[in-house]
Image 1 (cartoon, helix red, strand yellow):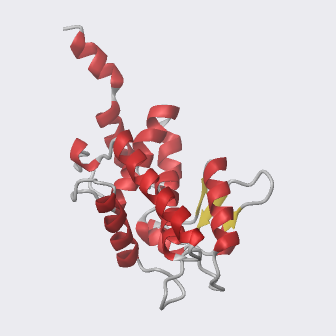
Image 2: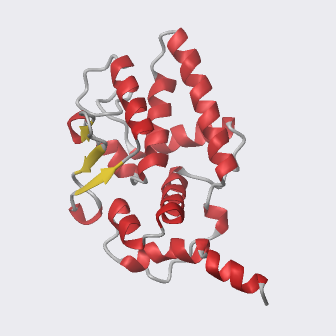
Length: 198
């Protein structure tokens, strides 16, 4: 990605938009479980994993069950073929761990991949994109958002909470710190405070 790439506010989902998406997914998952349906339960886990790890859509599609560490004290996954074919470990929250475990306990597929489709042993990136678009639309989100917006949201939130660019770079698998700094440009609270004092 070019260092000249500019992160714009239009690409960032707000906290309220993410809350609306989570709420829609949770409600659909509860209804699906009451009817013994698989799709919405898988979709909820898939999209909340995107929001909670910042993985690229290709990395989500390639995830296998063996790549997820859900053991006691284990809250991480392995990305085996990241950009540039790099391997990295990504940590996630205990709430996401619970969601993944519940999804695995519920699902009926015997696929080695975390997110199987009805016809294939795993979902392809285009299918994950369609799933995002479907639930984003049902949540009332603007059509400009894509599955990659989940990665942007994760990166900006992680940087806001941690204030640690190196940590964000590591979690996202950015080879260059310049790529990560675009999030700092959007979230630079010090600049905001400074201009208010002018």
